[in-house]
Image (cartoon, rainbow, N blue to C red; front, side):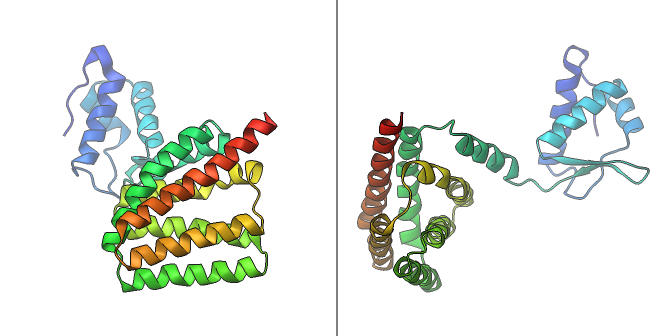
Length: 238
C-alpha cells in the first residue's frame, strides 16, 4: 500500500503518498487509514513525524483525526470548504483592493452570466423572477438590509444556473462576504437599490431572451458602476 519514506524528505513523502492514495480512491470517504503502528512500519518513520504529516493532511481537509480506541484517521469527502474559507478571509480582511475585486468580478460574472443565458431553463427563469419580485417589495418598503440579502441570493443563483461548480462556489463566496465593502463605502439607499433592481430586471430579461451579449454587457456595467462609486468614496475617506 505504502512504501518506506525517502529519508531525505520523510515528512513530505508521507503527506504525498497518503494524499495520492486518497485522490486515486485507494481510500474512499469514510474509510479509516491503517493504524498508527502500521503506518509507522510502512513508512519506516517516527511517531512524531507521522503525526505531523497526518496533521497536515487534516489541515488540507483530506482526513479527520478522531481520538480514542475506536478513532483514527478517517478519510473525508473532498470539498471546497478550505478554499472557500481562505477566500472569505481575504475578502473580509480587506486584503483584496476594490480595484482588484472589481477586475475579477467583471471577468468572472460576465462568464457566469454568459453560461447562465445558455443554460437557464424555465424553472431557473421563474426562480430569478421570484427573487426580483421579492426585491421589488423590499425596495418599496425601504428594507435595504433585506434587499441586500436578495441581491446576494440573485448573484449566487446565477452561479448555480451557470452549471459550473467552480464558478458557483467562487461566486457564492464572494457575495457571502462582499457586503462589508458596501457597508463602508456604499451604504444602500433607495436610489442605489432602485438602480440595482433595474440592472437585474434587464439581466433577467436578457437571459430569458437568450441574449447573452446584452446580459454580459449589463452585468459588467453593473459591477463597474458600483465599484467606481465605492472607489470614489474610499478616496474621500482615505
